[in-house]
Image 1 (cartoon, rainbow, N blue to C red):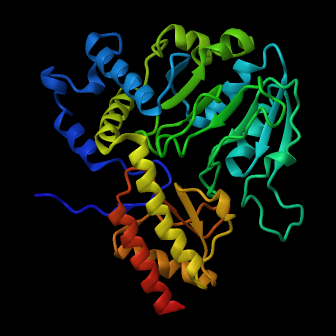
Image 2: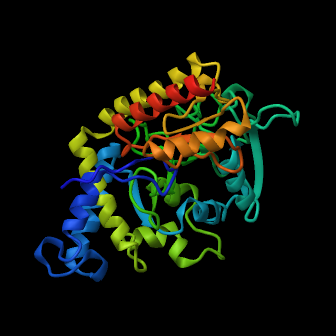
Length: 376
């Protein structure tokens, strides 16, 4: 008997596609008749090698990566990459430029300052304390990058603030055609078609659109570590050195074997759905349902400019702080889980990752309408 599961709007670790969970449960005790769970396999053996190599190949295919891009599977999440990126890219040039669009940008900037000369080329932080901060991406024409920096870093989607880049900055328009662009892509990877040709490096934790926590993906151009940054800082641990990880096919040390296995199942599921192009259309529809309700309402509000609204993470607010508790209690009774906003910004937040079905968003919107009618 199929059990009806609630709709999980958690920002991460997030919901996984039900077919993936079902297949993993079927293979839990014996993967393809091997008599072993994936969690029991040696990462050096042929069985896991098949799982690992297929996952990397499928991710490359889904993203449309060319032969010059490589995929690394690492550990430590995006938070570790905040240190790993500068440790790998600042050995020859200590200058790093960052755009500040919110909570995760701030974390990246603070960590990078430990390893180099960090310059904030633009910030969405409000100058007045009573003004709303971080509700947009600063227009590229206002950026003040340094032509001699080692790289320019952006957070592609601010999970907490709900701010997303819907197109990458044009480095040529900034007069920085050869400057490597680095993107924290944790919360919108695989959500829609993206052009990786202009990206030197992208990274993120897997626990939003790829799989369980514990796995980190890194997508980089070989030219980045062969030409722009041919060696890492001496203090960089071997397991965090991109060159060493690449030379060892992400098997320098024991990888997150089960997380890679689940990621591979997610990639297979995504291919069955029609790939990132199909997911992009579905995700635009899902986000549109929520934003349309917010925009048509005098009860709900958004603090993000329309042009920069995230399709993955939608923060929204009620007119009275006393309404949040009954909203969340009623939502849970309806099977709509994890809608509380992050403590840094408050309010409510619906995360609409790939695994969230359209029906779940429709159920959320219906509940929001009823709550507004009852409380508005």
